[in-house]
Length: 350
Image 1 (cartoon, helix red, strand yellow):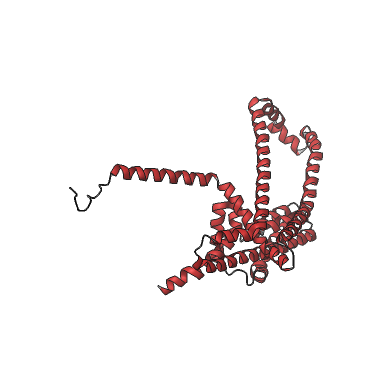
Image 2: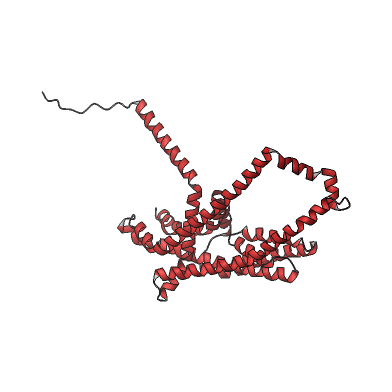
């Protein structure tokens, strides 16, 4: 006999609900843990993509001049290699000279340790530094600690080289295959909205590239100004300090300040008045950069309120360190474009 009627409602099992929630929480915890463990790798990938996107305007310009994309990428990479070689040629000689001077000064310092009339001799007579050093080096714990320090330095060097290889390799791949990568990503967007997404994405990538080119220009001006000031005032290592300030100036808001502090500290080796004058020079240059150089270099590139810039740099630096601070402003620009094109129009029409 067939029975007609509705099926009896299923009774929820609290055990099943709790089990499902527990499994979901466990999977979420493992996912978050995996992401945290991959943070360093993801940061390197983000840096590589950011470098590739920043160089895209140059590659596109070369393509418009008749070069194929592969050759255009090769020209850009060769130019970057030449610039890097030039920077190393400027930085390495003074560092080598300082190391040589340190090695040459060691015998004199050892002789002064045994001269009680010298400053080092009086310090040795009071604190017995040589005996303490011999005791530490003679103990097994210190030997293992020294070996551990050397091993740690080797690991750091190997890790740095590995990170550099990863960034360079991914950057080259993204530069060569960026059009294909974009076309592949666009296929995940419904056809009805694909044109709008392509337009806003191209605008974000274009502004990011132009922003970095403008940032490189202002950083080059900061480096040249540092070199000229140090050469004129007799501050040592003018070339190396110029390169350092140029690299630090790439980081918005805080980079130029850190560079100015370091150069002012180096200027103390000359005299206190020179150090104070150097600090005043960087304060004046910072004002000049913020109100004259930066607006001209960034004209028609980005339009971000200074407060938003500060917040973005602080958040990016807190989350991803130096890389986060570097990509903070382009990320803020991208967020602003998305809000202007999609979020605000829908809210205004609601």
